[in-house]
Image (cartoon, rainbow, N blue to C red; front, side, top):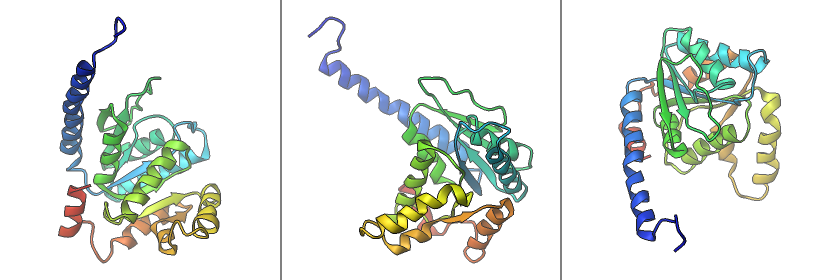
Length: 233
């Protein structure tokens, strides 16, 4: 063994102790977020400047959601995340930031009524899904696409209850959704019904209306079956 390297037993012990940190993050998240229902998770690029039209659009959507009684959950950082928190913070419903510790420190935005910070992406991702009434997905990069594919996979496989997934700004998303149709469906790796998992919209008021229309019949409170699905997410 080289000097300064951990023994296999030491490395295993260190990994085992990580379980307690992971458990603590889950417990803290569950306790903080269980009372924020109904909530909407908003995603989008951290690289969008405050003077960008996407920022203004996200802020407007978040404010309308807050005014309509929805808590708004974002990643707590800059860009679209800040726009979402800022819009919600100006309204009557809670603005929630699920921050992440990164090697290159990401400063949290100041518009958070509830602020949580996670070490592990996978714990944070569970928090985005577990209490969400809807997903609003603004233009973004790999992180945004990761969250989008995660929720669609969970719903497609029955591991999460069905909720509205709204892709905002049709010109940005139309190329991806066309690829879904012309390549993924053509090759049989998704079904036509999988395209019903999401809708594309452009106006803030249409986003709010789409969420309310979805829950007109079932109500916002999950059924007993849906509660069981979310418990075992």
